[in-house]
Image (cartoon, rainbow, N blue to C red; front, side, top):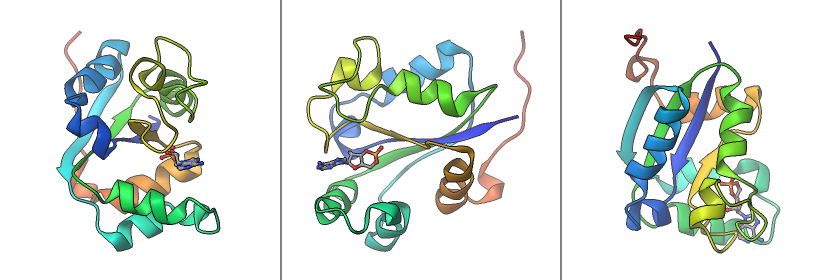
Length: 143
Ligand code: CMP
């Protein structure tokens, strides 16, 4: 079954949005298979956002994502990578549709509440970067 990596960023944790965000993905019908509140190190931030290294906002991005706890999650389900991206909304909250996480709660592109993998390749990379395989559970939900 497909898996994706989602993370409530420091602004989302500070604003008490963890429960609201988990609730949305649970109610959609996806399965939470791993989760933890954690402080991202500078090294992990640089590796996670490696593809943005040359961007002018890279330093700001690393500073922000390491500025406080994040809530890292792995969710499982059919087409979860694409569907979760749609539920998150566009990267820039100003362009994100109402009803999406960023459309409902975000204002600026830097502090945009949530991160989600954008492809099967990045999902695999990011899950392995943030989670040990022992931290991911396999279980069946009661219907
Ligand atoms: P995310 O999905 O975590 O992946 C890369 C992040 O870079 C993105 O969300 C934004 O929060 C951030 N980002 C993109 N553009 C800018 C920008 N112009 N200034 C600051 N941060 C940005």
